[in-house]
Amino acid sequence: MNLFFCENIPVNPPLPFAAQLDEEESRHATKVMRLQPAEVIRITDGRGFHYQGMIIDTKGKKLEIRLTDRLPIFDFSRPRLHLAISPLKNPDRVEWLIEKATEAGIYKISFIQTHRTEKPRVNVDRLKRIAIAALKQSMGAWLPPIGAPMKFLDFLKQSKESEKFIAWCEGEHPLFWDTLSGDKDAVVLIGPEGDFTSDEVKEAKDWGFHPINLGVHRLRSETAGMVSIFAFQIKCGNL
Amino acid sequence: MNLFFCENIPVNPPLPFAAQLDEEESRHATKVMRLQPAEVIRITDGRGFHYQGMIIDTKGKKLEIRLTDRLPIFDFSRPRLHLAISPLKNPDRVEWLIEKATEAGIYKISFIQTHRTEKPRVNVDRLKRIAIAALKQSMGAWLPPIGAPMKFLDFLKQSKESEKFIAWCEGEHPLFWDTLSGDKDAVVLIGPEGDFTSDEVKEAKDWGFHPINLGVHRLRSETAGMVSIFAFQIKCGNL
Image 1 (cartoon, chains in turn red, brown):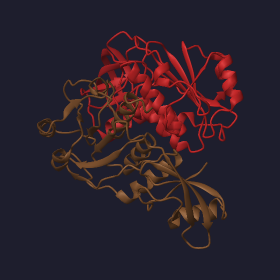
Image 2 (cartoon, each protein chain N blue to C red):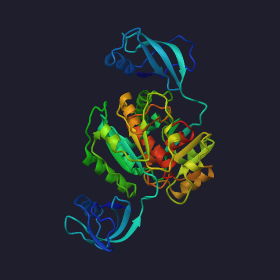
Image 3 (tube, rainbow over the protein chains, first blue to last red):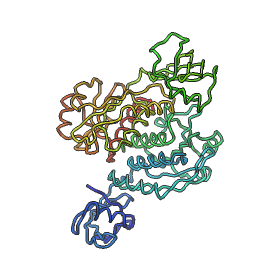
């Protein structure tokens, strides 16, 4: 079964509801999959739900559909993980992380500009497209918001999660797995290739973050991101 | 600190021991890092150990070194994971998996040709080079052997691990995490893009494999491989 993404469905629409796929999704439906009027498709709003929909009209650039049923998919009762990572020198590695994080059901992804961040920007639009493709491929329903990079300290100040962690290779810290409760929302900070500075870790502690380690292996930043996502999802029973 | 890889160190050499880096590693040491005689470097044999070594001569194509100390790094007392996965249509995804699996400390990787495998071959030499780079980058000591693809049934017949699992999206199976003991060597089979057939799963069961699932998300094959490696390493306390 294929899944289409449609961003402009209201939060809880009266059904049946008339909607339009965007041009890219419409082209895929009509040119690649050659779908015809009256065919039934599955759509996600990226906000936790799938919809059953029927194709009404394929003539315009935007496919007209009628949503008939709403299926709750994303489990909002489970704890959610927010990953905040430095942009990396190699954008491929960030893109790969976004794909895998979306597949694994991450709740939110942010970028933090740290002292050792070498390349402070990311292409948020491109990352969003990668997340949408991963969401569709994995039949998911939650498109993680991807924030534009923000300054490390600004990020610390506005973090509201119940459990706050900063992964740091230097020094002795408890294992992430042992520290996680598994029943609360959490945020994890992952540094750039050269890791956080000790000043940054001190600042993070001042704002309630706990230093953790991710095991005996020296992991690349994007791998550290993945390990923390998978560990969180396993602890919460999502994987 | 940089780590060099040297394949031709005997299993337990008398120290000090005279060794040579291969041409690629030698070029990296002399041209990129501009190392000089008498400098001290760290070397791994990829079989569980690091060595401290001194550079003796940089003139030839193969750097002459003298190994002076041997450091056990890989913990052979811990349970080990063997991952067997179908080759995938997109070789990038296999290469990515090899990199991440090596970083995360996988013990062995095999390729299995299944009914729905579309592209039955992999470039084992290239994958080995990727694993070596990942090993060096992560300061590891165990280079996972990468087997040439073999027929699914032949693989089943020769599996000797204490715990044997086959990941299968169809039907209801226990979660991998709940099934793993965490104190025994294990093998996990991951299918191609179209998954295993029910006949293959039946065959695997006949050979002592237990069907498991990897959670609520529909994962790509290489992501499923990563989730099983990370889950195993977390369960065994390695991550």
